[in-house]
Length: 336
Image 1 (tube, one colour):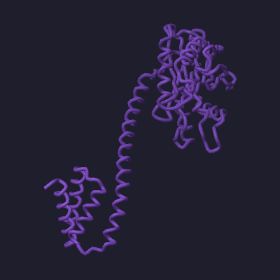
Image 2 (image 1 turned 30 degrees about the vertical axis):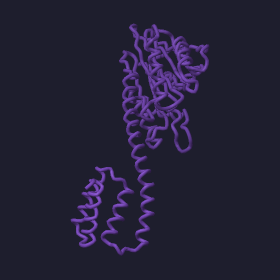
Image 3 (image 1 turned 90 degrees about the horizontal axis):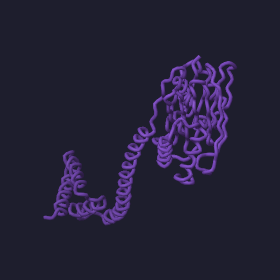
Image 4 (image 1 turned 180 degrees about the horizontal axis):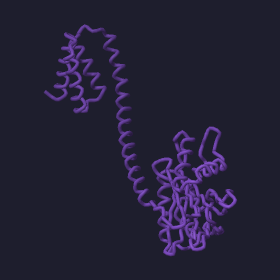
C-alpha cells in the first residue's frame, strides 16, 4: 500500500470505531493521528477529502446534501490552508528580523557606548533611553589629558535601523578627528562635511557639542540645530535657555558654526537634552519647557545622576510608560 492508502485506511478505521461506539479511545486515536498527518505534511483540504471518503464507506446512505456540503468546506479549507501557510512564512520572516534587530541593537550599544567620566569638581549625570530597540539619539564624553571634557549630544531626524547606522557613522567620524581638543565650532564644521557627503539627503542630524575647560571652568559650545538646553545660575537660582544657533548637519557643506562660552560658577548647572525630553506627549499635547524646569528644581538637591533618573521616571509616568521618542538627558553641575 502507498502512504496515501495507509493514511486513508487508518482514518477510515478511526471514523468507523467512533461512529459505532463514541469512546474516549477513538478520540485519543484521532488526536494521535493528527500528529501523523502533520509529520506527513498532509494539508487541511486533503483531510476534508479523507473525511468525506470515510463517511461514504461507513455511511453509504448518507444524505447527498451532507456530502455536497463537504465541497464548500473543501474550498474554505483550501483558502484557509493557503492563508495559514503564508501567515506562518511571514511569522518566520518576522522572527528572523526581530532576532537581527536585537543583534543590531546590542552592537549599537557596544559601538556607541560611552562612560560617564569621574572628574573632581564636576558632578555629571546622563541617561539615554531608546523609544524602540534602535536609538536615534547619541551622546559621548571624551576627557582630555589636561582634564578638559568634550560632550556631544546628537539626534537623528529619522528612526529605526537607518538612523542607528547613521549615528554609528557619526561616532566614527568623531573618533577620526585628529584631536578631540578641537573647539566645538571646528568639530561641527568637520562633521557637517562628513554628513553632507555620506548621508542620504532625507536624513539630517542635530548636534550640540561642548568643551568644558576644567582649569578655568569655561564652557565653550556650538549647536547644529539641536534642542536648546538650560543653564542654572546658583547665585540667582534662575534658569536660562542655553541658546546657540546653527544649521542641522548635512544641509549645507559650507555651513559654519558660531561658538559661545559661559563661565561656570560653583553650584551652576548645564542641562543638555534631546527633543524626546521636551516633546514628552501628554493628553494636552507636549509638556512645557517650564514643566521640565520644575522637575529639575524638585530634585536639584540630589546628585546629577539621581536628578536625570528621577526626571526620566516622572516623564515616563506622564506618558503611561510608553516613550514616543528617544530620551536623552545630561546634567553637569560644578561642585560648590
